[in-house]
Image (cartoon, rainbow, N blue to C red; front, side):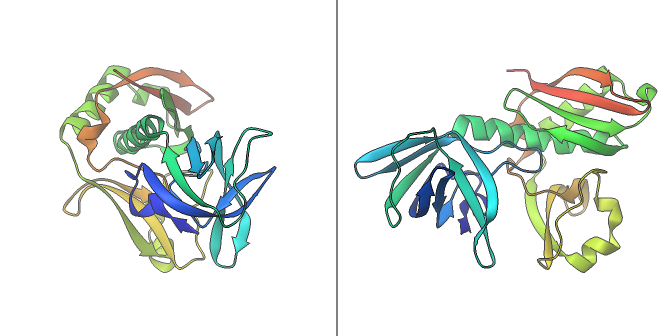
Length: 242
């Protein structure tokens, strides 16, 4: 399956062919819909074909359908019309929702850059997002963190994906910020998200989600609240000012 969102996260519409359709969802030979994973929700949108249309209410990973290729399920409402295998379809992404996820996910990387503790959990949302950190409560100042985040956003740092080998990943354990989830290895390479230039790095860590191309695209961010979730577990909740 061709993962079109990997090559271009800004792609809003694409063509594909149905591989299989049934009660569990629709499988395609290519998709621009990001599947739920890594704390980022699955995309929503619409699939059109000659004589029919169906809403995509969620996108999830499934057991691989083809050898050496991921399988992604496009979830549709029960009793919806389904395009039969071999049908040419047009995919329409709910772009506004996805773009908010991209902005939020990138902002969460900036939050990692200004909070030194290890990440213990997180969730991307279109309205609010959260990251949990293993840090003492005294080390987090809401107003100071918010100002640092917005400074990084206004600086309009470049954001790009890069890859390293599994061996390089094993030799650089400091890149892994999340305590609960290890980056996927075994395919020979690991995808990283880099914020900043090579000689002025802001953040670099494994991530398979979708992100904006420059931090300025995030827009103003606010820290909604900081909560205590354990002896040293602090939850930071982010929101958009717009």
